[in-house]
Amino acid sequence: MSKPQMCIWLPLCMLLLVTCSVSLAPTPQKTVRKASSITLSGCLQEGRILDRFILPGGRGKIYSLRSKTIKLSEHVGHNVSIKGQLTRDEKRDEYDFEGSEANEAYGKGKLTDPIDVDVTSLKVLGTSCH
Image 1 (cartoon, helix red, strand yellow):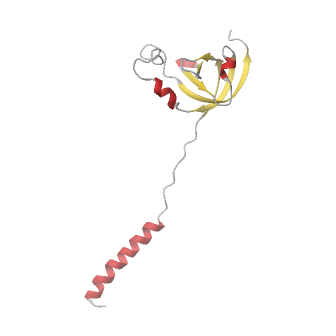
Image 2: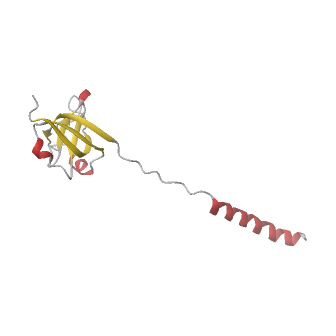
Image 3: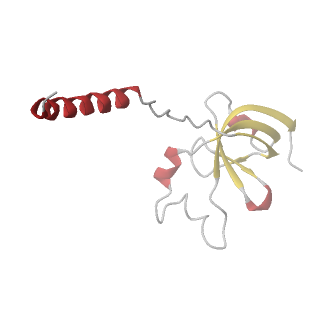
């Protein structure tokens, strides 16, 4: 092969090699993060936001509960055990702006930010919390 032919074929071969290696490279897998399951028990209380309920937890934790399938309002004041998925409630974020009624109970020396739970099942342990 002459030098001029080599100058043409060498870049073409390199381009072909690079193109093949890129097309054969494995594509990165998207990881889907599953919501964490949680089981809690305690006295179900009404929340400060419509259709949100509170379940106090240990060590100052507070759980903000909601459910599309279970009528939590029917169990306010009951000692319950719930199962659900830990999620971030986007709707609650709309209410958590400075000076809002929902935000007044939280902050330094007050309640901790609630942990959102989407309740999937509920069992009544007792009809009162005493």
